Image (cartoon, rainbow, N blue to C red; front, top):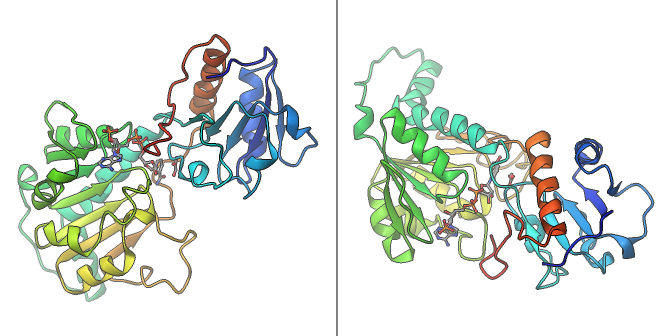
Length: 315
Ligand code: NAP
Ligand code: GLV
């Protein structure tokens, strides 16, 4: 990792939130020269770029970058850029206030299915007063795909509430109260005991379309899906088919392949789908700017930054 200047030059391109990011970073890095994309700057001098959905082609205009910081937990918007040099370090946000929000989102969504709120909202539309037995929470099996900064927090909270939780990741994890699985060879077994499946994987070439007709068929009949990771993890046509045949009970989706979700998209008025507009966990300026400033100091001291992305595996 190259070391930094004492007064690094930083460019922010943050999809309409440049000014808020600049304010948060200026407070923490008073010696840095920080510019936003609409200010004038010499691209040759930029040391660090802070990106969220940066304009296409911007990376290749910055020949002397030392690192790119993603202003989110995901880095798919950066590493998918064809002009990203192979060895340029990419650094992501780790939790930075998002884990709590993910926990809240998933508690709501998991209880939606476990307490039959999907059925009651259909019943309300037909003025239908019918009571269902309340399932025991310990009998409701939740599977969490991705046990990183966010997935492990969600898995632990759901387990603490009484759900029977298992988790699946690339490398084996040990988390109190959670049954863990690792690797492709355990995927079918993990899915086979997930009544509610939560996806908190990063988007990489390996995880794209991981939820498709074949993997849905491994889920128990009547399983529900919650996806607040990236839309690309689900083959959307396969999801619609699995819902329409009754194999899946419902889907709670915060993300979609195309965002904003087009007005004509069949997800909007599907009776078994609940949609939220990519709000499961917002980036918090304060915690995130603390993390980024700390990393810039670490790089300046010749230390490895936290949240460094493995460019080989893509997250
Ligand atoms: P993370 O810390 O990098 O964790 C990723 C987890 O996925 C790790 O446990 C990893 O396994 C596992 N994984 C990766 N590739 C895998 C594979 N091929 N097979 C099995 N497991 C695999 O990521 P995070 O911070 O928890 O964030 C997860 C994602 O949430 C982000 O990438 C982003 O897309 C999404 N997100 C969405 C929102 C929203 O508002 N909707 C907000 C923030 C983040 P190992 O532990 O073995 O590495
Ligand atoms: C949001 O989607 C993120 O990756 O932080």
